[in-house]
Length: 249
Image (cartoon, rainbow, N blue to C red; front, side, top):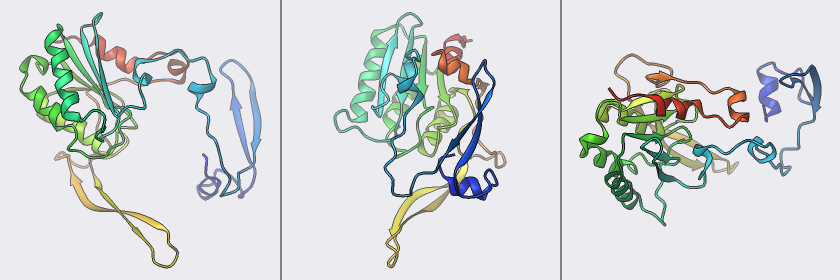
């Protein structure tokens, strides 16, 4: 929606010029809004609805700037781990982070471990290995229905691979929405610079076949939970709530 040339290409607008949108408020009539495209080199500042609307705080948006963080939730006896980026934090190497996670798990009475991958668009797939190894060495944390992984439309690349590892190797229950990428897809991205135009080109060097059951369009969760705009505006997180309700058997 932010690239007028693409809107024109798919037939959403008649010409490359001002774009007319038909919008509607939740309890109001439709209205028209005409927006002129910005010049290609213009500096554009994007505003998030979380910045301009009074949306109540949600746990998964608590520390978006961090690659990974965790918190023990005593009321639900849940260990919540948010893994936002498959990238080492120089201030807290992932090996040390995993040590802190398991120290907290051993000091508390953890009934379920929740790994949130909904915002993880990838990076280095090896970063998460200390967490996977540590979970595998602790049967109580990965007993049936006690390890839960949250996935969604922004779970991509190495984030998708982390979800598959949690499910296949540790029997995690996937909760949320289908991922934003096919399990069988290209990766290992490299870049080159074209000699004359000096344009930078990204290209893939490896095909990953992570699904042996055909060629699904996404990694589908075991428990499908969708979020509506009304949920977001009200500060509700039905995916996380579903994880808290998921009873170990």
